[in-house]
Image (cartoon, rainbow, N blue to C red; front, side, top):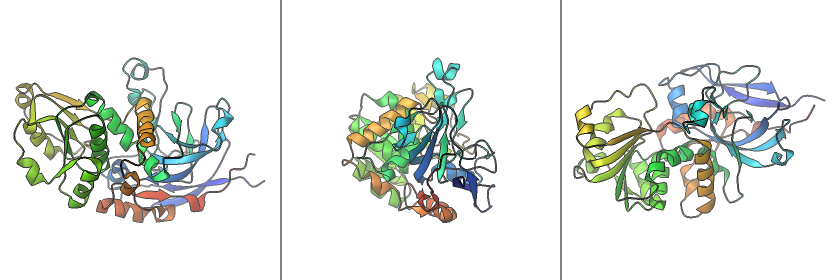
Length: 357
């Protein structure tokens, strides 16, 4: 019997074209699941990598936001997974080191493996979502998706939505006024979550009028940078930075009331030197917090949120119609234009039934 094959899009570095290659699909090993990717989305970190703003091993298969169907299960994984449409954590963890066990930060596991961020090799070629298949490792949390949650709604959940559940965890009890700096997908998700958690006002600032136009549909109040600059000093209880630009931080500190909290989420690239003084933080008794990725509980919350509120927010309006995997470079061009909060990629034209050897 001819072995089944998968198609992967290899990234060789900034300025170089993606390469489509075929690799042999082998049966998954102990604890592994083989998933046929039905839809993937381009995260901001993927864009930073392709444009050279952050480093990545090459060649590699990028993409960590995705959804797919389990087509094969390794020993130790129940065969009941077969045929299930699933989401999964963007990281595989050991479950026994101090970050996993003591600190409740599995995303900082000492033996962390991140999908879409690893070098391609004969053993781990299927480790990114810009491919027809992905091989999920034994330490990856996998979550079945209810039928009410579409592929377009689910694909970004295992990065953007789960990350915002992690970022908003300290704000779960509601409050007065929150300011979100950035109206990309993280900002839109944060707006929806905070409103659901009882925050009276959620202001969302962004220089892009196309992005601002989405804010009201998710319960927020859109602001241009000029309007945000006119807000009263010390009038905001919490600020969340998802703009990815260090230049917004001084304004966030100015707007926070004494005792307020500031969470940095978007500044995940080196070009983030800050122009602030320690005094500006100390005198206001501010709490500063950084959020990078998330734990499995946050992905559970994200999927549950999508399932509970399938009609209350226009989730699918946030994701572009899919580009075929063969047009991945065009999809990245679309992502650069910021005309969609997320641009999606489909590899269905390359998918072939998995044949057990």
